[in-house]
Structure formats: C-alpha cells, structure tokens
Image 1: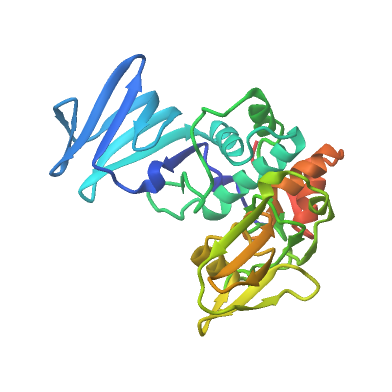
Image 2: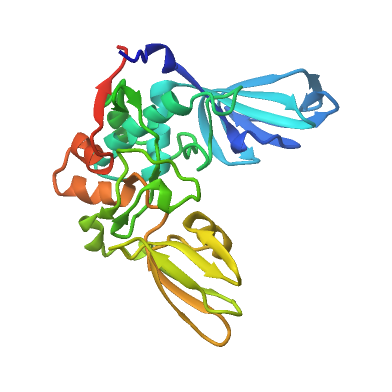
Length: 318
C-alpha cells in the first residue's frame, strides 16, 4: 500500500513573488514599517545589516501586496532578497482556495481544498527549498486578504483528504472555465501525459453558464489566415498552422493571448478575430463547472469524480 503520511507537511513554505529574488521589500507589522534592501551578501533592514530577517503576521506592500499569516522570512539570494512564507498547512489550504475560487459554494471550495492538498503531496518538492510558489505555476496564494469563514470551513471539513488513483496522488491540473469542453493533456501540450483519469468530452453545466466573464473577443494582426484542428466531436482547438508554424493549444494561447482554445474565428484583411468562451487549458477540474454543480446540489466528492474518472478521495494521516 502506498504510504502518504510522511509526504504531507504540517507546515508549508511558500515562495512569494514566485520565489524570484527582488531588490527591495516594504513590509508592515503593527503599524511599524520595514524597508529591506540587499547589499552584497547581506540585507539592510531599516539601515541595519542582517544575514536574514523574520516577521510574523506581516503585511507586504512591495513587491506584492497582501497580509500573510505565519512567518515571513527574508534572505539574501542571488543578488536579491528571497521572500518565503512559512504557514500552517490548514491555513495554507484556506488561503489557496480563497485565492483560486474566491466566493463560491461550500462543496466547490471543498473540491478545490482536496486538490490543493493533493498538489502538495505530488509536487511538494518542485522548488527544492520551498514547497510551492504563489503563482499559477503552482497554486495561487495571495495571503489571507480574501479568506473568509467559509474557506476555513472547507479546509477543516476536508482535513487530510487527498485525491488518488490506484493509491497515488493524481496529477493536479485545473482551470477557471472549460467553456463546455474538457480535454486530456495530450490535446494541450505537445508531449502531454496520458493519464487514465483525464478524459475528453462535454461539461454540460458550462454550456448553460451565462456569466459574461467567461466569454471573450480578441483581435490578432496576422498576415495569413490560420488553419485549425479541433478535437474530434469538440469545439476545442488543439493545434493551429499559422505562418508555416504548427502550434499546440498551450502555445496558441500564449502567442495570441487567448483566454482559452474554445473559439470561432474569421479572417479579415488586417488580421484574425477570435470569439470564444472559457478560461484556461481545459484539463481536470473546471472551477466554474464545479461552482455550477455545487449550486445544483452536488457534493465535493461527486464533483471530483466527474472531472477525474476512476479516482478515490482518501484520508491520509490524522
């Protein structure tokens, strides 16, 4: 049997600003301000030289803004200052689901909480000296500014719960809105993994979504009209030939700044107009779909099993 307990930390270390070192930090605690700059292999805190510096329950004003629970650690690193936030696991989970989903029904937040915890188990050593960064590369983590009682409740009621397939934590992929069409990684990334719990098909709840946030229109000044290939039986584009280049879905979105690859398009003399729906890559949990399902009365386990087929929600540790 796969043994999880040692893999789930009691305390999570988060790399703020994606763990990228900065030249200056401005922080506050209890009305007192701290200006932290780098000087050679040292840092200066309000002009005082230190090897490292720590603040508890502090507010950051630069390079990012937010209130951070637990311990903020500032260290000189590669010519700058690296900011790390050491926070209890349950607080981290609550902060992630607040940052990722904001105000949402409890059961959808619980589904996100299970995935946030599962991510740590699968990718907790991705950054070496810290468990996760605060950006989409890992999971959105914006401190406790948006955290409400419902987020802490979702974390508490799913305590120690993770999502597994045959005893191992799943690959945690999720996105904001599928636009009605979820897909497998092979349709997003050129060398996307083939994992049995991901699937390609319709998410009917999102067809009925009338939230204007997830419809969009983008103009791209292209000289030639692209040719697209769609996933069979789907409106989702997985490749495009443009100006002699073949792009996969992930690269299409990056190059042309498209929110998703569920779109129609037409070519004009000056470029291409894309009109689409959804936001994100379309693999795994659709956060908007989870919200709509929760509103219909689905519980978090049913939501997770819809998006990750054949998986099991499992409790690990105490």
